Image 1 (cartoon, rainbow, N blue to C red):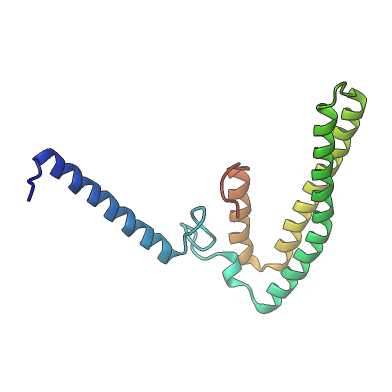
Image 2: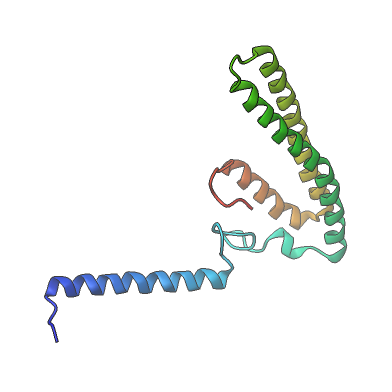
Length: 157
């Protein structure tokens, strides 16, 4: 049997300690419901999530509001993607037509404007369904998301 020198032994102990602590923290996060992307609704310093306090009637109303929202948003998102492809083709042409590019950009900004208006109409409609306590939690979530901004490459909820 070979003997380990003290340097190798210390490195192995350190590695095992790190691996063990990672395993424990992963298990603790799994118990709290943290999976993809960090904190979810219901965890954190504010306690319960507004979604956890909904009645069945509120859930049904919110589901209908979401369906109406999706009926408006999906066609807008589809058109935005199509225009982005058209723009890419126009820009990469042998002789890019500036007037055509500008026209597509104008179309794109109108659609993004409509998408944003619908998004905030939807948030306001959801808020109307909630009671005073739920609104406080909902408002904190809305403000927190606004402060965070759009994070590319991260899991979004």
